[in-house]
Length: 71
Image (cartoon, rainbow, N blue to C red; front, side, top):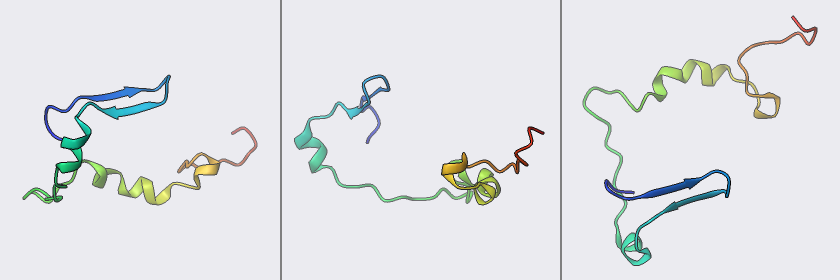
């Protein structure tokens, strides 16, 4: 995906699409990930702690521990 590409996201229809000619899209080379000089990412590093605490997705991926007693 490049600057200027139009992305279509339609949650009701379940559509995620890019409006680029398929031949042009296939001809594009993949860009290499280049972290910036500050060593910071896209914000994911801010939530590393919470991702490590999260429980299984089947249980809601919560980091809170519930006793099951409604408290």
